[in-house]
Image (cartoon, rainbow, N blue to C red; front, side, top):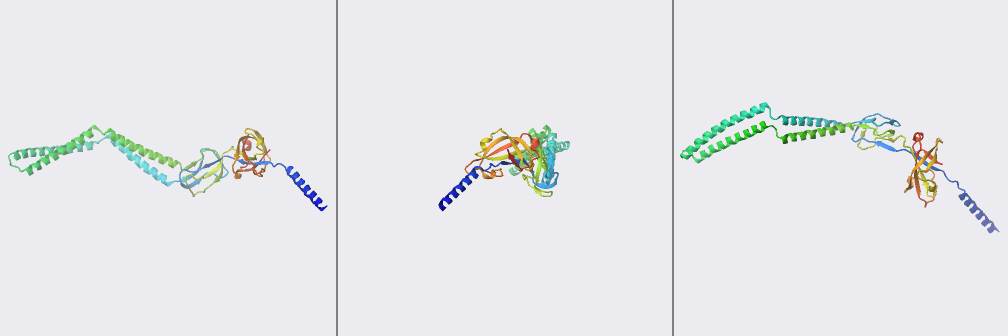
Length: 319
């Protein structure tokens, strides 16, 4: 008798558990509100002189977010300006050629060397006659000949120099000077561009969420100084188990409710993708079997103006 009663109780408990399991209410699909994130970082390292914005502020394209102190760039600009001025003077000097004073100096030098050459030529002529008559030793004859050759070489050199100056500066020298000027101007332009990078300019509209550093701190190149959201880019992420994904298709319109204010609005499914990791799941109370695949659907609101004020990461229920 006892065994019969016990068996009946176990069977009744099993039936009750099965009934409860079969009547388990289906959980709502709850997702998260998201916005496209954007960051602004300096291209140069420098100390922050001024921050012009605050967290929570909306900025427009072209707004100056912060100003950096980059003394190294100012030094490079000064160096580049000096090199540019020197190169410009070199180009002008190459184009102008020799001055009147330089020409007078060369002509005076030419006249002096001509006199020296005439004297050496006469001396060498007399030395040849004396050597022919055996009145001069070979050693002395060689000395007169060397002086004659030296005077002739000096005169030829100054004649060539004067001729070169009178014909003007060679084209190659002008081109070389022009190239040096262009190189110096390029360095100056590069320094000026670097100087402009001391201003951190917004390249996109943004709702500032985080300012990473304060005035006086050192901002390194590439470090995100301002982080925030692009306005009117709200979207919603929901994770759906394999057993329920057939209800949703790409391009399908769905209804959603914001949990904290009960505001209802509609959106469109734009992507459906499988999730590889549990950490990516956004549903607050996932309800799926361990062997099921998990998918994420991305929904964008049909009217961004309606959804722009919804708080990021707030819960949204998919109806």
